[in-house]
Length: 375
Image (tube, rainbow, N blue to C red; front, side, top):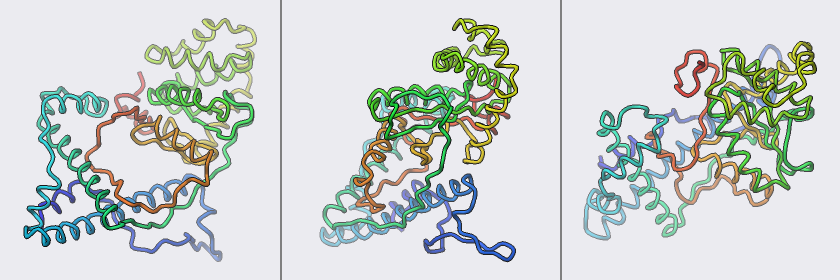
């Protein structure tokens, strides 16, 4: 077995490959047959994510088969062994100190250990990342030389009705693209996601609108107080000012912050008190949370673009712009036919852009995510 195959085994995703052929999902319960489209949104999103991962594994497996075949052909033509050819065409430089430091700095949020303690592991991670990029380059070369491409079954295009009316929004009054964000004021990833969304809004301010939805998952209780106070700030025309101030002071938020921020914005105290005491404020907050749960939101931030779930992976800004362009120009969206691999490694790549993580109800409760646990 080639050394290359052993390398690929370390790089490729190990999720179980689906055996069943693609087709419309259905199930039988009681005396009736049901279409998969009748399943709750949260379940459909989970199934869609699984289909996407399975497609990626299919791509990886076929890529590896084609790469091996190409290496054998090249080896035969050059009178060499496949291993010799692989060693040459897939050769990458050993990472130096600067490369290790760069990877460490870019991935600090996930590593959170002293550099000296993880240096040996970083060597393997950076080398694997370089090897993977080299494999992608070779696969692109194969695609050009051999007209190689893979056609995969398209996962269901999920589009949900996400309520936007009577929720705070900014941007175009007649948008082609609506970005809905479910967020928690104590979630650091929400703050980062909000900043990136605002930056992209500047680029598409005549075509895009951002709608904020409350999803206070942090169990400290502080997020819920802030969310309620921001609803009351909206009644006085200052939701976004409150929103920005809450995120600005995120690291200092405490039980008294909801009212402190309101005072800083000089909100009318009597109106604020009446709003906070009004059962409708609590009902509005709970309605937002309930819809979020029905849409499969179990972590924040959670985004929907024109009703389609949007989950950024490595670089939210680039991925958000791409998703907006796709929404603005649907006819230019390509089918699920890949000319060369875009596979991902089990070794996380360096986050060269602004990746956005997720605070979820589990980590918020247990504090296992250092960036999401409550004070």
